[in-house]
Length: 367
Image 1 (cartoon, rainbow, N blue to C red):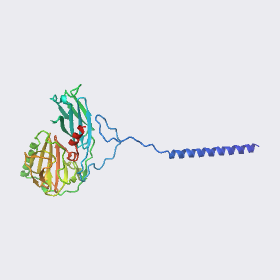
Image 2: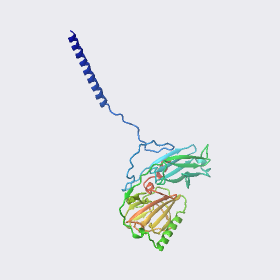
Image 3: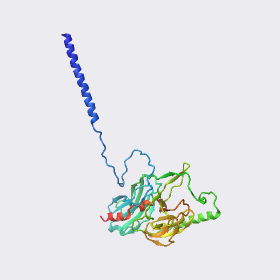
């Protein structure tokens, strides 16, 4: 009888143990089948004033952000708008990043427009020239390619604009731009640009060229443009992007101060916007060189031309023929080097010729 009881006990224990194993397997199976939770936080594509970006995990540095390809497509860019009690303003750009130019448009209420006698605009502590046109205050803010902070500070000062203080500061988030680099083993360059021994005549000419540029950039005028910038060539194909560095024997060379466009000798060059020619002559490094003053210390530069078709003092309109593509000066082949200098800072020309800034702001302001 005792043996029979033991057998029954063992039999029941085996059944319970088997059930426990089956239950454990089913639990594990269900856990495996449960889907993983996915984040649904949306990515923000706009920039807001006075808001700090979320900290991001370190990402691998891309090889380049600027692509060497056809660049004729125009972009809408980015826009930031801010409304205060007595005025509003908008800030537009291709992107808010190193090497870019931003367009600032301020709209004071009509009742205080005539009271703005001591109004000033400062960008990173530097006072910025501006113009008043049709009830708006207009100017441009250059972001240096070497800008190293996450924010740029825009300050507006005028006691009639603010009810509590005479001025107010705004933090503008600035992104980092990863400019292109390329390794070069050798370049086919005229010996006069690679030798360390220059004749006295050449040294004198280089000094004369430097003085001519310095004098030209002293030109200061009111804003001469009314519409957006355009490309300086037909079928624009970028040959070398802005701020690209060539690496010779593991050492970085000077960054490229403009954007190079492909072209054949004699191809036409057009003014990228309205302005006044302030320099048009042969230079040592730039070759046949033209500089146009667009106002508010904004200058466009055209280098290496085979022929110059304008002279200092000429008034030009956007799209006017001003020269022809060549390979004069320090050049390895026919192309147009287009530069953009704003308040003494070299800016990527594509940031204005590639983007709708001024006309887009007009449309938005009417809403």
